[in-house]
Structures are given as structure tokens and as C-alpha cells.
Length: 433
Image 1 (cartoon, rainbow, N blue to C red):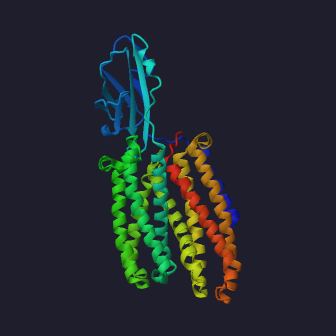
Image 2 (tube, rainbow, N blue to C red; image 1 turned 30 degrees about the vertical axis):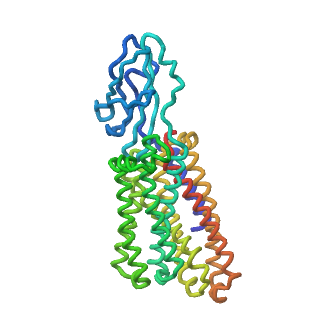
Image 3 (cartoon, rainbow, N blue to C red; image 1 turned 180 degrees about the horizontal axis):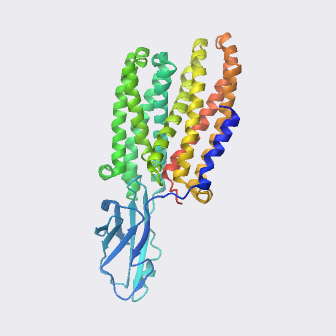
């Protein structure tokens, strides 16, 4: 891919949001009866909450300012009824929270109304439940680790299977794959506990409680995380066979089919925790997300293999065999990333206003800017492959000849880690805010 083509694709990434219609964000409260701030003549016995999309009864929590949870019953697919306590001070104030059935994100708010006298205003300093900053940081860190581990594992397997079968016997390549698998398992387990603390507006200690795990695993996002954990268990079988059989296993059609099935499962299970289903075309969003993650995995996993395992060996035959093949694969992967990004930007952001005036849109712009910098560095790497690779092979991997390419690949890898960090923030951000 030339620099001009990369620039055009990046510009196209932002084009759909100028023309598309807004997409849905997390579950939000549409109205309440009584309304927030209402002054009533008689204390109501119940409160009705109507949301902008269907909600599960177990995902709606309503508590008094004293922390007592109120009973909630079903009224409709998108509405619930809350039994209110008797108010002896002339007013009532409650806080509500709801967990989105699709992606597990929580929304919250506060409702207060007075009865006869504006006593409810005396409690105006009571804030709605808020997410602990430490829990959010922990969730972002777990997702960053999960994305990185997924990319290293899936991309590393593809690199070995398609470009470098002999790499299955190289200690550094084997260690990288094992480290990626370990990170994937640990990040998945940690995400379950952190998700439990997230939806209950608890602290980091709540993420370690067995009850948090039990509560999350009964929800849709929890089931997705459990499925991802099981897929990592299956990935251990694929990895174990590769480590045991080496190059012969990496060339085996049966192993490749198994590795492909596990990789696709991991990519899809990871994508289900994002925002790709929000919008008018969730099917297209899911397909675009799968392609986006696959392209990122092939690109990042290959970069890591080049940096950690291939270049330090400086073997002329391996350079001639592996580097051109990866250069072509990376070009295809970047094209997939940008093309799928078009669909995802249209699906999630949905408007020019959403791109410029929401934190989600700002993060998306930052991601696009860093990606542009990565593409500039990648262009330098491709130029080396075209003009200097033959010389490096003739000089049998001379360090001075290979070193510029190594620096370029290392810089590209470092910026890609920044892209993954921004992606982790995007997953926890609300597209509508």
C-alpha cells in the first residue's frame, strides 16, 4: 500500500460519519412518573421508569438515598414499576441504574420530587451512583491486555502457519505465543470481576468477591466473557499441539483448521463486548468488527514476531522468505482495518456532530491520528523491503543493514500499542456522550 493510498483510506474513515444518521448509545432513561423535580399533593406509592430500549428486570436497580434497594417489577419491555417507601419528610429521592443488555455498560441517574413542601430539595447534594475511577482504569487495563494478547496470539499463529513454519521451534516465538495465551486468560478472568464491580458501582475490592463473578455470569455480557474464557481453554490445546509438534504441526491442515476455528471464536467473542451492535445495522457492524479485529491481529501479531523472533536472528534466508510475505500480508490487513473502520464509524458515531462533540468521537479522532502516524512509519518499512532487503540478504543479515528496518518495525509496534490503548478507552466510552 502506498502512502497516498493510506492517506486516502484514512480520509474515507471519517467520511461516513458526515452523512449517516445517529446511532443508539447505552440504555438511558426516557421519562419517569412522577417526573424528576415534580411537586405533588400526595405521596405516590410507586414510580414508573421508561427506558429507550428493552431492559432485563435484574439489570435495573433503584435505591433510596439511605442505600436501601427498592422492589422493582415489570411493566413493559422497556419500562419498570418501583414500589416507593412512605415518605415522612415531605419528599422522596431515589437513584437508579441500569445495565445495557448488549454490551454490559451501566447508566445511572437521580430522581427527586416533593410532596406538599419542597423537602426533597434538602437532599439535593445526594449524587447519583458513579463508577469508581479505579474500577474504570482497571477495566481499561484489562481490555488493553485482552486486545494485545488476542492480537499477539491470533496474529502470531497466523504468522507461523502462513509465513514462518520453522518459527514454531524458535524459543522466542514459542515464548511470545505462550505469553499471549497467559495474558488472554488472565485478562478475561479479571474482566469478569471488574465487570461485576462496574455494574454495581463498587470498588476494586468488589472485583475480587465471588458474588461479583456470580452476578455477572448470569448476564448477557457475563456469558460472553465466560465463552471467551472457554475459547482460551481450547486455545491451550491448539498452542500445546504447536509447541509439541513444532514446524511439522504448523504445516498440518488439521491443526490449521483447529487454529482458525479457535481464532475466529476468540475474535468474535472479544468483539461482542464493544459497540458494533449499536445502530441500525447490527449484522453489518458485527461483520465489520470481526474483520477489523482480524486485520489488527494479523498486523500486530506479525509485527511482534518480526521484532522479537525474526530480526534478532538476522538470518539471510529467513529475511528473504518472511519479510516480503509479511509486507504483503500487512498491506492486506491495513486495508481490512481501514475498510471495516468505515463501517464501524458509520455504525457507532453516526453523525458529524457525534464525531466532534462527544468524548467517543474525540477518542476516535485520536485513534485515526495515531494510526496515520503508524502508516507513515510502515511506509518506511516497506521502502526498506523494496530497496534494501536484497542487500541485507547478500550481506547475510549484516547488523548495520538490518538495523534501520528493526528501528522502523519497533517504532511501528510502539505506536500500535497506543492505538490499542485508545481502543480500550473507546470500548468503555459512551458513544452518545
